[in-house]
Length: 95
Image 1 (spheres, rainbow, N blue to C red):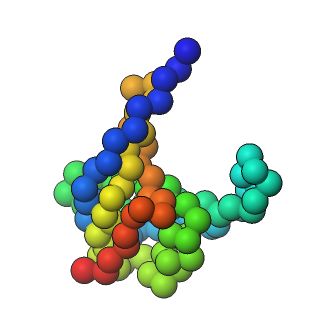
Image 2: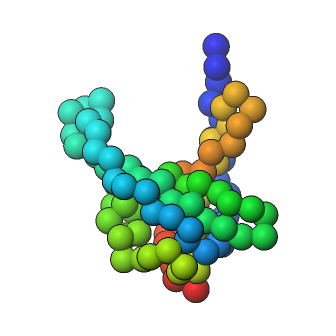
């Protein structure tokens, strides 16, 4: 059994390298949802952050080259890999 562990990371700061196209999907309850990936570059390298729901709309107000801070980023550990997610609890701020 592959267990997924979740925890909150306070902040990720970086320069937007790329905002990937938005993808639509149906949730288990039948509702339509939206997701996109954003690549951020900082001194630690390039990180891909997955944005969900309203955060997908919010990121459309930004463009590559903008410096941003993402608050309340959720880290998910699976198969010894870490992924970063920003959902309704998260905040996007231009710096």
